[in-house]
Image (cartoon, rainbow, N blue to C red; front, side):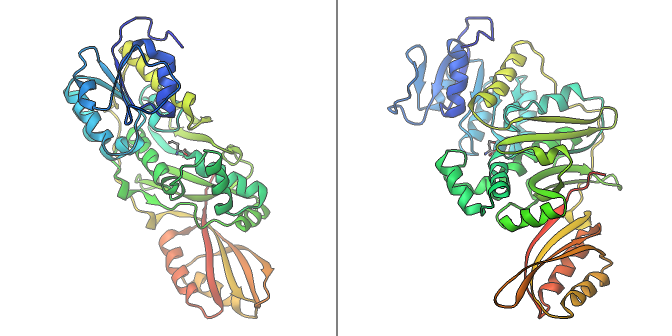
Length: 419
Ligand code: HSE
């Protein structure tokens, strides 16, 4: 236990006693007045005799001692209502809830300002890595050019293992679930929703612009195959699920989450396992790099408790209003190199017919590898293009899919530029 608050008041209400809730409780139990749990009879292996335990949120709200509510139940419902009610009842709120802050952050932050209470959420993005507070506070003099990162530990663990051990996603996922690294329903992680929530929160802060979830391009990792790592490696890359928010040459903001080829020689390529990393580029400070535990009980508790200390010290900044706001642009206009893996008929003229379709949309091929030849006479063709416009690439893919000698476009992965 840490005596981090240096007082003996019991003025905290805790919602949730899951993994993170327990870690927070362990550190500050002398300051907790009441705790909300779902199941009152569940045995928990912690000493709860000096706090009020309830399964009714109204008991927490009506606890006169409670000045700050720490929400650690997660998910949209009922967390959103609980946070809203707490603010309306003039309680400070600390939350680790990325879904609520991504979907309702603007409304809840305005409500908190109106009610003169604090709503802090450092733990909602990248667990223990301090990223929200640096953007709001320490780096507030900067206009940002980009924020990009690996902000989902589950998919990073899976991709790392696929890459190192030549395994398919389904095999690694099963093992990750058995070890407790992946949720029993892994959809939010695998399909990229978790990273989408987090990059939406970071975009709002770094670019002073409201980015709704439907304005964020989203693609998860389910179509990545183990052989993509071999081919990517041969070309000098690895594959990561990358979330980015960046300003393009027309001063428009593009926010996206998708698997990306990362050059093996940049630091992001070495962020492995469950680690998270965020790279932020400011006009004054240049590039800053944050790396660490993106999840886990103690790391997440570190962010939650630091928010609590900020409230105690009244050291809370709001989004700086001197900053520019940006219009959001769509993925159509994105410009990057592409990696494609196609299963084609291994006969003369196939490559020429594919190159012709690319050529018609001004897409230039930078390299081609012909790989595994299969018994049915098909082969894998790995194509790397020069930077091209997404809309042209999508149009070419439609045409190429219809070519008789192309059986399937197995994967299309964008290459992240580090120039
Ligand atoms: N499920 C998240 C991850 C952790 O895998 O990174 C909490 O945000």
